[in-house]
Length: 492
Length: 72
Image (cartoon, rainbow over all chains, first blue to last red; front, side, top):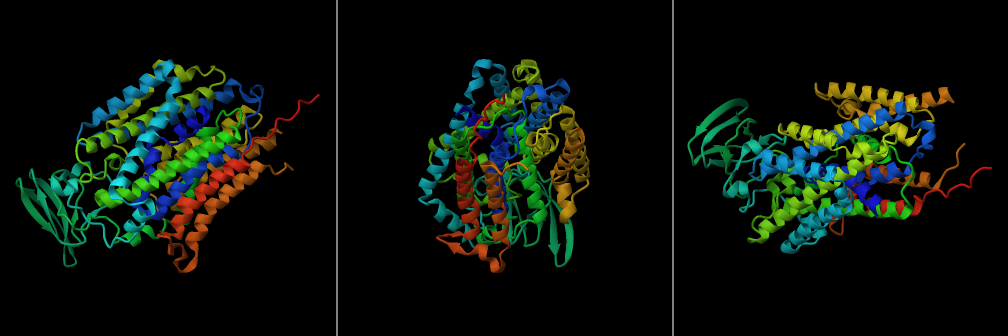
């Protein structure tokens, strides 16, 4: 059972677990593709390819240093992404960003440094899952809607409008915490109020002419924007929106959300290859024996349940809080209870606390499981790397410091999974006899990945080339696999 | 040539489940948007059927190979 929990905890970090409902809410069918790949990738990774040959064949120091260092860096970046998400959640819920970061990083380090707590991953994962499911069931019960009826309601909505109970309508919220990249363009006349005043910058559409305007609003002052007007990024004042008006940036209707035209084939393949190779690197590297069939079946069941939860959470959230679309759906917004008006105190706070507890427990379980994976790979060091308090203090401390600056946790996780997948994936699937062949293939894969990722900074275009730049693993993983194949033939 | 193992069949089936999502989305006349029992075909497939089939595939086809007897 423990290995099942480890598989699930390594793979379903909070960023990945929340990435699926976020994508489902933002772009229905594309989110469905992501959820399907996240569910199937670990199974393909564990089922495909061969298992590492006996330690005597390839476990020389030159063959293990590269995977250990690569996985260490991968774990560091994954911790960074998840701790940054904790900071985002804290900022979104009105606390200090540093508070979320310190709590998660300190708890994660304590758990990994204290050996007796090393076996608590299955329990933490169970707590996370039960808490998340409990909140979802409570939401479904309060709405008196089954999952199919809930999906049908979302997919039949003529438009996504601000509910009167939305925090954006009642007290307003700071625009500065909206981190999604979707433009705040209005579809209809909308009166905005600045309860505390501030500077609002907007691009208004006057006929065919665009004009950038800056208003300095007194507390309580209102401004009216028309269809086509856009609030510019950088406005950090608190704003109150009107109830029953369309949410800027939301799909035109529920039908368009449910049946949206999916992204191109190249992009979808790129996402799939990134996640598949990442799953191989995280779950297969250093694997000496395949999990038993019954355990793999239980792991598959766990992944299925997690995907079902993600779908339910996305749909119920869209019913109760269509303001999720404002500025773009981001991960931290999915850890806020979406039904402010449905529950009275103290239920509301209890459910919100349960959600946060689920997130923290999932993070701790993932930290422990990732530490375990790293230890399993370190065959020459006897797995000691997984228990070095100094090393882990540095890893958590570095990740916490880096998290003080907001980053996109999802993009960071994809970068980590893609990089690890290109460096370790091919050799983990088809283990060569000689460690050097694996290292050469991994280095080439990593170089190609880094090169394309660097090009990504200049922006990805369209088509297959654009997909290769947006998802470097699409090219880098086959490149590494080709080098591995050549190396195996030459050294045969 | 290496023999095709049950695991290989399982992996191919999982890949086919992923490919099915592409094919369904590419069908003409937006067949994937047809609603059946409140849910569109694409969502039935991608959200319910394919993940459930994946669990069955994992249970049925991912049995570890029996250990081979030691060579003399």
